[in-house]
Image (cartoon, rainbow, N blue to C red; front, side, top):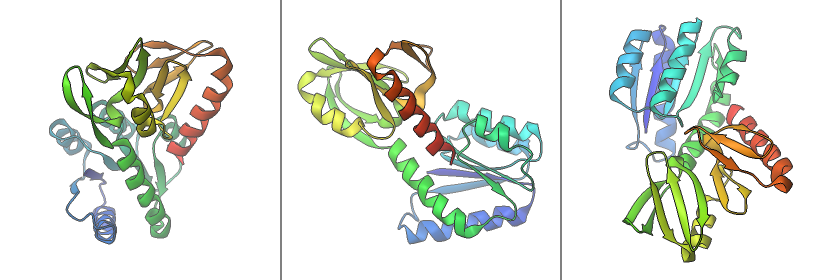
Length: 237
């Protein structure tokens, strides 16, 4: 797990770094993470060119800093991003970007502790891995990389961010048990979709972030809207 902290005030860099170390120690995860820190936008952009970050704390003092979050999500759409600021000036734009949490300085460490546990739980859920036998052999999947699963004749078609695979329909029940979490939703009898990759919901389809439209069942529309609404609220709170 790679974590980045960007703030021009060394006090908050030290405070957050120490906090993370202490809590990772309590969770017996001391060897599972690495923290990089920086004090400028230029240094931040340089770091994210060479490494994928899973959790970020970004000081917000201008709209230029908001762009840092956008560029981070270009390299990792599942990045858990926190904004920290002396004011609430940028809170609207923060939540429009689906930021995980917005921290007002000075940071409430008691609240941060609860939220950090939620960050870890979210990270584990998004990065869950499993091996499945496919027509391409035994493949290691990460749930965050799966866009959707389609029942395809007597096979299952698993579409990821960079490829697609076919597996036997007999593995459907096992796969559904793995994927039917808060991240995935059945939009139609044939499709189970990762909500992290939904851009928009239309009258009879959903648009994914690979620019693909998938058909939805008319009688599921209300349920889809409610589930997706609750999902986005959870991601933002």
